[in-house]
Length: 152
Figure 1 (tube, rainbow, N blue to C red):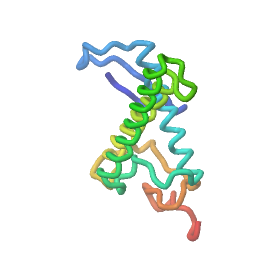
Figure 2 (cartoon, rainbow, N blue to C red; figure 1 turned 180 degrees about the horizontal axis):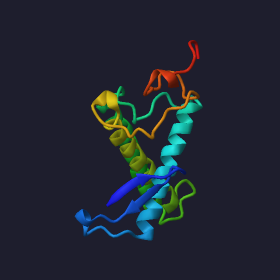
Figure 3 (cartoon, rainbow, N blue to C red; figure 1 turned 60 degrees about the vertical axis):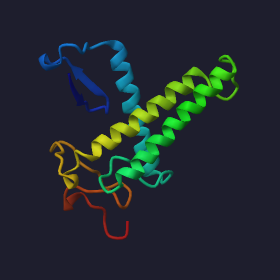
Figure 4 (tube, helix red, strand yellow; figure 1 turned 90 degrees about the horizontal axis):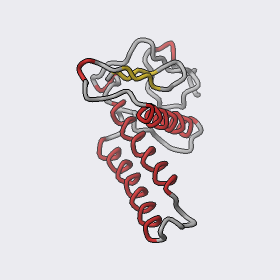
């Protein structure tokens, strides 16, 4: 399976002969789209200053990323317990909340995997990817021309 990012920040999935057992299904496409949308939401939270860092940064330690993923997993467990305890009639959590929490965990894991692709961590980033100057301070930049002016 080949997963590529399209111009609209969604994923294009193509079947590869090396992955004969994986089928290109509408369900899989919907799941990847939900994860991609959550990654965009995480980036927006970072841009707005509502979160201090993102797991896609190779500078953030693996143990911190693991704690974030574990916290997300704990939220899944809490939602499942709440739904099961009330027989699905909880006023706090629904099956949709469980799906949302699972999507957030998957997006955190995808971000962590993205950190390995960063040139600073020894990975490779496609030349087509660029970082815009409206990124928050502390963001890693690919080249000097993309850095914000001093003091911003």
